[in-house]
Length: 371
Ligand SMILES: *[C@@H]1O[C@H](CO)[C@@H](O)[C@H](O)[C@H]1NC(C)=O
Ligand SMILES: *[C@@H]1O[C@H](CO)[C@@H](O)[C@H](O)[C@H]1NC(C)=O
Ligand SMILES: *[C@@H]1O[C@H](CO)[C@@H](O)[C@H](O)[C@H]1NC(C)=O
Image 1 (cartoon, helix red, strand yellow):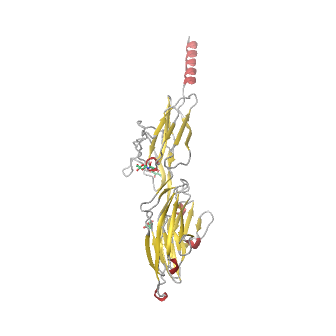
Image 2: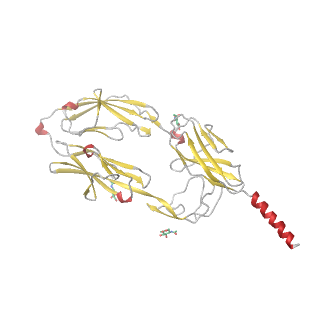
Image 3: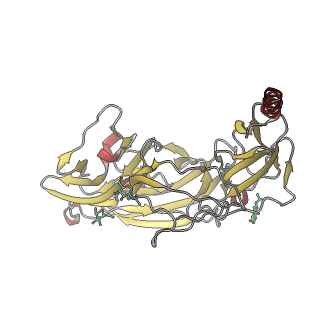
């Protein structure tokens, strides 16, 4: 009798074991196409798998880059609950840029995917782009012209002409990464019309900007001061260790004669170092490759003529992304569910865990309470 009962129990356990589903894991997470621009259609695909299970339901969630939840019930979004596909039509970078993730569910549980980055290529034509601008400068002084900021992703390519012919950088003439014009130690033959074309090579969009019409007032050479001067100094840069491939500091000078440019950090001059530091012609730009915590600090651009110099500094700040020193248990929780986490993390700046008095709240979804 006892024997028979345990036999039945054994069969029952076997039946449960065969019947039981395992909670899903995400096996595929893709965006197609992988590059896209305003107006395009994109399909995000999330696919789950689990042993002993073949049917899943999927939900999608999205946040902007600050972590605020997005409404993806708009008619431009169509979502198939059974296939894990989310199609977005008429992509619009202002509305769609951000992170998307899915939640897949079967009868045994749920799993949340990693985040997919969506950043829609675009180029916005700057207002009054055709306007002609007049700029005048004294011989031996400097001339700068800064246009309205160009809104583009990825970074646009900007090309220049002077009097209709292609113009390249020289020791005196510089084009900043943001698309502005700088001339040091102005000469009488700088008089001309300067034009630039902004092109987004991915979207194929481009526009030409109205001319900068430069006039120069000649001066008696003895009236020209030879003081070195920085017309565009380096700006603070922030990099994420292991993620940011490089950061570039710019430094453009004026003076008569033109100053030489050098870069320093902690009192030491910086030279070319394979894979770490590169300098462009005339040392106008310093690039730090694969910046790490050891490169954090104050970078000085120094412009020097005979025995005078001027300096400008900028900081490189390195963010080390937090790594959890205690893995939060059951980290894959879902909207409308609550869970208890025990958590600690390291990184620099020191990560602020939500729930501490200075911490900021997490994303709108999922909501979390930390104890
Ligand atoms: C994108 O959406 C914004 C409103 O959020 C709208 O002003 C803009 O015209 C849209 N852009 C395109 C290309 O449809
Ligand atoms: C660079 O950082 C230091 C502190 O480390 C700060 O005192 C200084 O003002 C910063 N410089 C710039 C240009 O922000
Ligand atoms: C987290 O870890 C750091 C260093 O590992 C430690 O100093 C800190 O006390 C820990 N915090 C908690 C709440 O456990």
